[in-house]
Image (cartoon, helix red, strand yellow):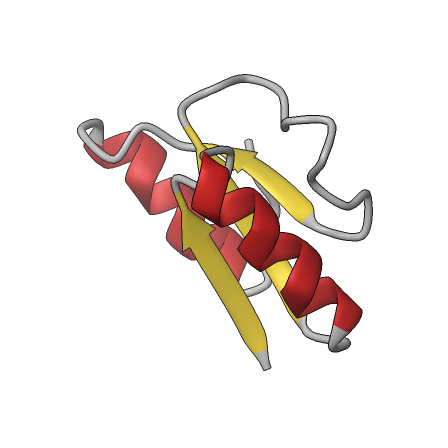
Length: 70
């Protein structure tokens, strides 16, 4: 199962990402910041997404469907 954490660079998202990876789940962390917080596990896929921008948000869905980000 794949989990997507929108706002994953935030306090709760960081801990959730760590726990999901620890349990063996594929995890995608999405946030407005260009780089993930140091606490985000390297096994997570990190995607810079601005949910206010339609094109950026569509890139997230492409990634979740197994596509390649531009």
